Image (cartoon, rainbow, N blue to C red; front, side):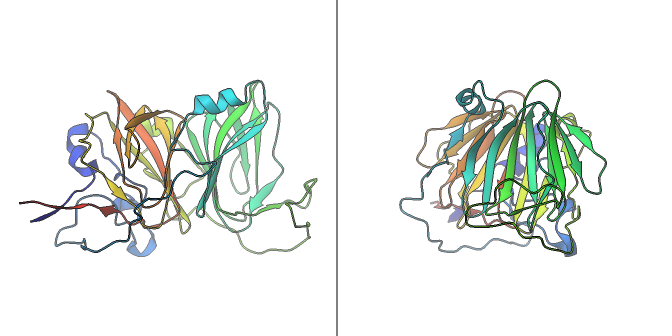
Amino acid sequence: MRMIRFGLGLALAATLGFSLAAQDASTPPATQGRAGGRGGRGAGAPPAGGGRQLVWAPKAIKPGGWNAPHKPHTKVADVVAKHKGQADWTESIVDDETLHADYVSMAPGKKTLKRMNADTREWWVVQDGQIRFTIDGQEPFVASKGYLVQVPYRTMYTMETVGDKPSLRFEVNIARATKMYSMDEKPATAPSGTQFQQVSIPGKGTYAEGNKPFVDFNAVAAGTDPTRRFINDDRAVANIILGRGIPPPPLTDKGHFHEESSEFWFILLGKIRYNIEGLSVFEADQGDIVYVPKQRWHLASFGGDGPSCRLAMNGYTDLGHSFEVIEER
């Protein structure tokens, strides 16, 4: 008999006492699917009547590794220590064919130029300090630790550090995103191989399909904000996956792999345990980043004794999950 080993999320939901999102970023809650009824297939149990296919999937014998700047586990404490004594710095954490992400520190009183992405959405997790966001069409607001903020394409915005200490943010863009700037604030230098040209460009993105300017994760953790899918875009998704600590799953449970996409997680709360092919099991803490290349088995589970949460991110709206098929006698 063949048995497909599925993720733990749905099986645990009843015992944890919360409504859980599925184990990975490709599974939106049913109430937050795409327009026209499009939702994610995801990592939960198969739907009634069957919805899974048994297939042969090409998986690299030696899956891709972690080329710089990628690491399996980036500890925020190490990143901050590396830049001790600096107020303004940027540290790249993710740079692959789908997404790019940096940790960025900005000194008190510093402000970005008024800018926008030409064709893609951009988002941030505020890790420390306070940032005043001024986004076209929205009332300005100040975001502190735990805020998740996003801006659609061709929507001008600025960020300014307020208060008496640097702000620290995790900044995520679609790979090779291009910045444009207000006519009033031309940057001093253009990106390598380019020159600035005055243009007129129509249209802008909107906060549709469940997207909104910001989510205060503190409210999510408190149970007063039900948001689970933070980014719902044709080029990327980001899901809030919240639960309580559980015993370590058996090492024989490989989880799943993604055929064509890497995936990474920002730890929002508590501890998340990772079992990644080729590595010893480890736990990541709040503010840490965990990255897994495509075609590498991985299983994330809730660590510690209390609540924990991760923001799962990848560049596919309906990411496929490949689970092991086990022969049983």
